Image (cartoon, rainbow, N blue to C red; front, side, top):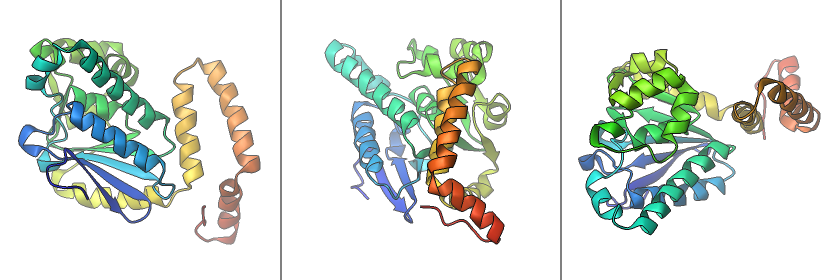
Length: 263
C-alpha cells in the first residue's frame, strides 16, 4: 500500500483480486492529471501480474468520485498541450481497462459524477450501494465529457436516456441507474461489504481464460454488426473449446462431480 498522500492506493486481497482506491476523500476523490497518471501506472502494473483476475475500483470516504478537479482545470485549460496530454492519458487508461483480460469491478458509494461516471462506464461490472447518486453533471458547470462519456453512455443506456442525463446534469439514484442498465446491481448499504466479499470469491473462482474470453466476445461484438459478431463468436468459441485446457477441465470436473481446477 502506498503512502497516505498518494491520490490512489493499490492493495491486494488474496492472489486473484486487487483493489484500487481513489484516495482523496476530502476532495471527493477528483480525477485530476496526477490521479489519472497514477491510475495508468497501476493499470500497467496489474496487467503484468498474471495472478490477478479481478480489479476492484472504489473511492475512499464513502464517495466514488465527483469527477475532475474543476479548480485545477482553470490553469490546465491555459496549457493546451498539457490538457491534451491529460485527455489522451485518460482515454488510454479507459481503453486499456476495456481491452484487458482482467475483470474490472466498480463499487459505487456516495456520488459518482462526470469523470467518475466515465471511469464507471469502462468497467465490466458495477455494484452500487442503495444510497449512491450517479450523474453526468458536466453541463452543470459548462463542461463536456472528455474521457469517452459522450460515446460510452449512449451505448450503455441508449441515446435518449444518455441525452437526458447529459443535457440536464441530473443525478439519479442507484435503483433508477440499475433500471436503465447503467449499473449491474444495487445492494442495501448495510449489506454492501458482505455482498462484495461473496461476489469476489465467486469471480476469482472462475476460469481466468473463460472470463477473459467472455469479456472479449461481449466487447468485440458491441463494436460491430450482429452478423459479423456472430461469425466472430463462432470462430472464437471453436478455437477456445478445442485448444483451452480450462474448457476441457470444466467438462471433466462436471462429470467427476468436483470443482474445476482452472489454470
